[in-house]
Amino acid sequence: MIKNNIELDIKVKCIEQGTTQAQIAEDIQTTKSYVNRIIKKQDGVVNKTFVQMLEALGYDIELTYVKRKENTEGGLDG
Image (cartoon, rainbow, N blue to C red):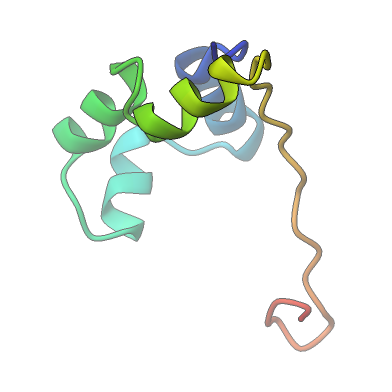
């Protein structure tokens, strides 16, 4: 079972960033309705089979969000 409320997590992250789901959709070149459907769908973010495998092994899933750090040149570290 996924312990996170992904819909709420996304809403909070959007508020923190001062953005909207519509802006995210535009950034990733998809539609607002698709972003909304993925967020609301229980198994839309994490593969259902992956969840079932971990459940069979006795695990629940908790997602942790870690903000990426950008280097001084504007690109991502890595």
